[in-house]
Amino acid sequence: MRKILMAASEAGPYAKTGGLADVLGSLPVALQKEGTDTRVIMPKYGTIASELKEKMVHLCYFYVNIGWRSQYCGIEMAEEGGITYYFIDNEYYFNREGYYGYQDDGERFAFFCRSVLDALPHIDFVPDILHCHDWQTGMIPPLLEAQYRSLPLYREIATVFTIHNLRYQGIYGVSDMKDWFGLGDEYFTSDKLEFYGGASFLKGGLTYSQILTTVSETYSEEVKYPFFGEQLDGLLKAREKDLYGILNGIDYDEYNPKNDPYLYYNFTKSNLNGKSANKKALQQELNLMVDESLPMIGFISRLVDQKGLDLIACVLDEILAEQVQLVFLGAGSENYENMLRDAMYRYPGKVSATIRFDNALAHKIYASSDFFLMPSLFEPCGLGQLISLRYGTLPIVRETGGLKDTILSYNEETGEGNGFSFTNYNAHDMLFTIKRALKLYSKKTLRAKLRKSAMSCDYSWRSSAKKYIKLYEKLIIRNKSERAEFSYEERSNPAVISLIPAIE
Ligand code: ADP
Image (cartoon, rainbow, N blue to C red):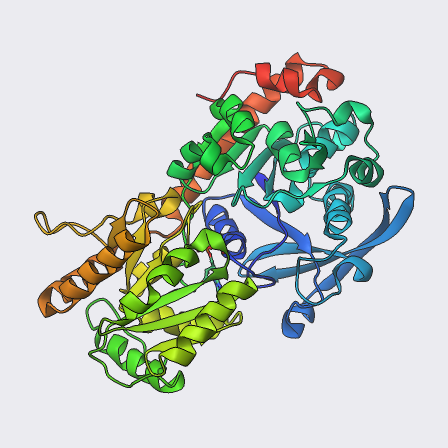
């Protein structure tokens, strides 16, 4: 049985700020169903719910070197949904409020990266594939090549790195990075870790991992261009033979209108009565005008510029000139939080803005809304639109990244489509699309048809998990041949890695 270890900074149900946690909570289950032994390793944060912490078992502890310091590292273990999770325990680094945004995040995740590698002999689980996710795990592959490869236990481990969002990179000063990782000058050149005068965790992952993936096919193409590439487009273009786009799925058990425990009323594709009953109950809960016939547009997101909030700000009053309600749930940049609070103040009964992270409310909004707005500037995959489809809520999206790959704009000629979309990052294009959606919404039979076709889409993990398995299998074969062909020193040289033939 293939052994896969996923390393990430968040994973549902333990810690979540966005889609990464959804993926780490559901992809392992899908991979397990395909006959692998997939486990997850993540930090043990102070904010993990106490009932989940109570289920953790202490496995062992050891000390991890961070520069000249030697830090305690406990390993806790828990099983959830059939998946084994390991937790890196260090109260100083991780027993804090929230997950990120601390001045010493670089050192915290440097500790995490080294702890993951140091943990392997202690947890008695040497993976065939070490699958790292996003910048917080980016230094695992370089450390593996530079300092662990020559040890027998680490010899055969193959590496995959998934970019969930290229914007967040973990860039720190070269001297700090040298200190944390004990790496010499030779690693801080422009073909390795150096990045515009600093050094980058993410670049480490992109340079040293054998295979790179992104979370949709379109995003895997987009990142090779300067607009989306976040100054790493050149590197990604150079590594395009090893770069794959595999679309995220969602957990069809967690997001299931038939038995979702967070909803006021459950409903199914064949009986949608519960959907409008949910809307009424949500209108009451959020102090909105209670009127089933008013179209409701939901928006649930981190409040950052990536999510198209500038477009919303630009035409907010024009949207609200329509017969419509807007329901926002999110937290993030203060300017966007205030923009939404202001809209709620100016449009009582028409706008609701809940500024926090609230999973239960998110489920209610997905189920109650008629439309779900995602006008993103860029979107590596996007899960909101997939969750919406599951609840018969029609996405209104901008055609970028995963939004482009999953939402087909309704075509009046052919009757095809599962939502509405626009091409340019332009507020009035968005406004036009919203108005078009509202107009079609008024046609009862069409509305019912569109909801049914949205709910008939299958964005579960089934097909994407198979794609990962196929990729892992090819990589394992390639890894074996590489290990036979190259010396240990050669193997830690990215120039040699780039010579190795790509998987066909
Ligand atoms: P990203 O990963 O960029 O944040 P995605 O669309 O891929 O965006 O995933 C976002 C996930 O986080 C979804 O499951 C969404 O429902 C959830 N989410 C975002 N903001 C909130 C919030 N304030 N409260 C509850 N869930 C949220």
